[in-house]
Image (cartoon, rainbow, N blue to C red; front, side):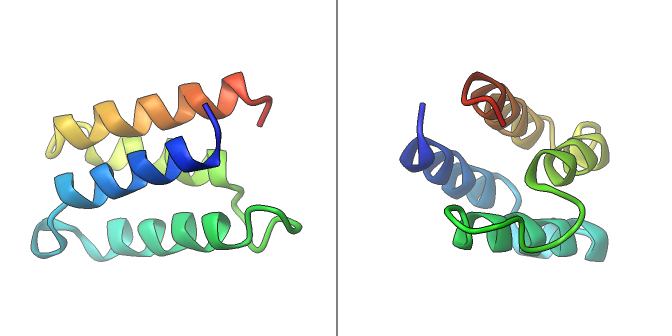
Length: 84
């Protein structure tokens, strides 16, 4: 699984987390996740790192958005397989 697969999962995540249903913290985490994807080939743009952002986001959404949590877990698994 590579960057394109991660981007597909991000698109799916955006579909799962309808913006109107997201908390301000979830929106901020999604913005940070997008910043990491935008600068994929460069240095880490911000702290926390992509993996940490996803771990925080999954904890935040797993009760209210279980389908989105599944997508985030897939992304974390993909990053782990990529050595990130």
